[in-house]
Length: 116
Length: 113
Image (cartoon, rainbow over all chains, first blue to last red; front, side, top):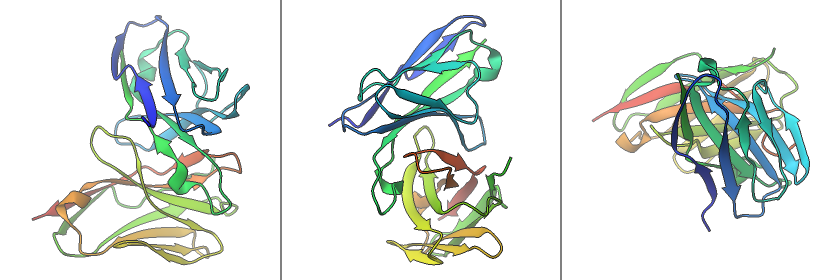
């Protein structure tokens, strides 16, 4: 059981390049989401999914695409990288319980992205 | 838009003392809150959560207090240890869909030996 796995850990992109951040979970969780964290700030929701085939926008979706073709995978695509997308990206997965879901949210270790 | 925020960016405490980290929220419809700990280079780690129908919840060495009248959350850490040094975030559930969260800006806790 690996939990939530993100790749790559570090990436440097040139402005205008595209890339995909990978996220995989092996816990059969229904819910997955992507957040970005800028220096000294909290996480902001980019996109989320409540199940395979279903995605929706979060607080800061512009410049990013997602898909959820399987329960396990939730890749985040940067269409045309900009310096403003320099950030740390966290993927998370969870399942819902009647008691709440706080302790069921599992975060990945993060992907550090620099756009030059 | 409405958001969750924190009063103090940095809190420095002596080892063994109690720590109190505060958080203000503005969305009166919020019904679920979570405190996270984040160590350098790592993802957020769940500490404790609380629903809006409660005003206090206790865990191991941690207590969360919720004051809905003034829309205020606090995290109390008893007998603070060096391993507690980290950034602490409060987060608010945006809705019923799994893990949609709005995070506050974070407070850095520094524990002096």
